[in-house]
Amino acid sequence: MYRKRLAGAAVLVVLLAGCGGEPAAAPDPKASPEASAESAPSAPADPRSTEERAVLAAYRGMWREQMAAYRKASVKGTRLKEYAALNALSRIELDVRQMKEAGTVATGDLGHDPAVAALDLEAKGGPTARITDCLDLADWAEERDGKPLPLPSSQPTRYRATAEAQRWEGRWRITEYTPEGSRTC
Image (cartoon, rainbow, N blue to C red; front, side):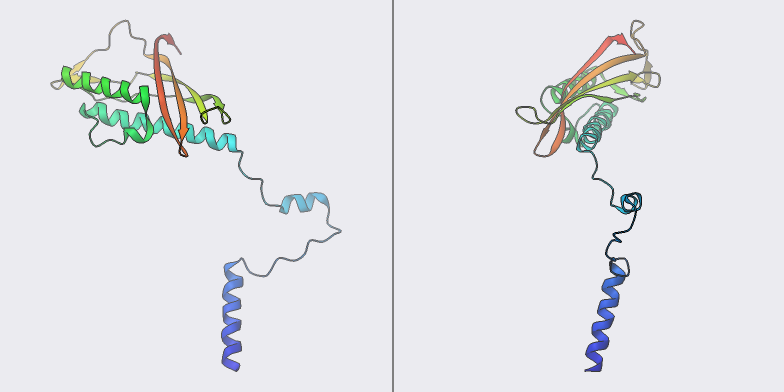
């Protein structure tokens, strides 16, 4: 009998330690509202900001995989379809195909400054978002046969781009991508 109590006490100690120690005391009815507000758990994260972060993560993921494809002029081995779909995916695949045909690959980096410009979580057909970005070509480079290719002289080094995203089956994907090379930022 003594061993059963001892084992039961040990289990109780482990459970209490796992839950943060002693059981919570009942709130003091004389406590000030400020004291109870400070001890109250924080409010859940704003669903809008959570969705905006998810949209930007999808956009950055698309660019990460796109740059991997540009560096080898092939989409094989990339996870583009996890981040891009519809017209955006088709545009990237066409760019990569043209790079392969021309014998070019990317060797530099492309700078970004994306922001969610619009978010509609109640859109008919599912949530949608619009992203604006300022692309920076300062560190961008391409080469053919190991030789650097200059940017066209008319190409601004910083220009705007927009993207559209949709959430399907709980995952954001970039569905449209439009570079606006004549609009500087």
